[in-house]
Length: 304
Image (cartoon, rainbow, N blue to C red; front, top):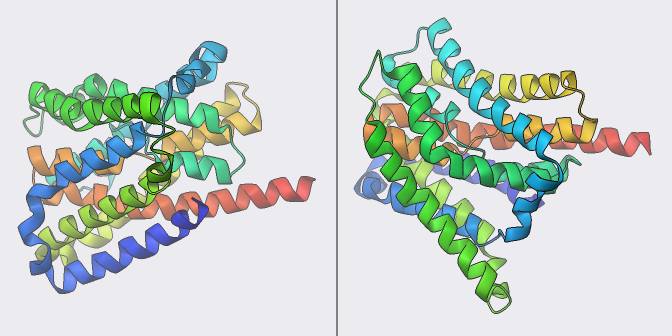
C-alpha cells in the first residue's frame, strides 16, 4: 500500500504527458469515466465492514468535527480561491465540485503512513461518501447556482448510482464472501489506482488544446486548495482540543478529496474544462499527502 502512494503520482504524471502528446489515444474513452469511478467505489466498499462504522458510536466527537470541517472548509476555500484568482467559470465550477466532494480513499493510506488514527480515517471517508448524495449537489448549488446551472436532482441520482450502489455492493460482498475473496481483495487497491490514472489521462486529453493557457492558474488553485485544507484542518482540530494523532487524521481527511467524483460530476454536468481541477487534484494531493506523511512519521521517530 505504501508503495502505491509513491507510484501513483508517477503513473498519473506519465499518463498525463502521454495524453497531452497523443490525445487521440484517449478521446474515444470519454464515456468510460463514470463506469471507472464505479469500479473505484466498489473496490472501496469491498474493503469495508460493519466494524468500520462503530467508531462513530465509540468516539462521535472527532467524526462529527471532521465531517463539519470537510464539508464547510473545502468548498468555501475553493470558492474564495476561484474569486481571488479570477478563474473562468468552468474552472471555478470544477474546483468547487472537488471541494464539495467526500474524502478520498487515498487518505486512509496516507493516514496510516503519517501515524494517524486509521479507524477514524476510514470511518470519516465512509460516512462522508454516503453523505455526498445530499451534500455535494447542495453545496455545488450554494456556491455555483448564481453563475452556472446546477442540476441538483440529477446530480443526486448520479452520485447514488456511481457511489452508493457500488460501495454498498462491495460492503455486501466483503461481509458475506470476504474470506473466499481474500486473494482478489489484495489487488483492489491497484485496480482503483489504475482506474483513476486512466480517468486522469482521459481528462488531460480532452483539455489538451487549452492546457497552455489555463494550466498555471489551475495548478496554483489546486495546490493552494489542498494545502489550505490540510493546514486549516489541522489548526482547527488543534483549536478544538484534539490530540495530535486525531489532528493529523482530521487534517488528512479534510485536505484529501475524492477528486475522481469531482472529475465525473464536472465532466458530466458542466464541461471537460471543469473536470481539469479534479484531475490535477488527484495527482497533487497524493504528492502532498505522501510528503506530509513522511514528515510526520519522521517526527514521530525522533520523539521515540
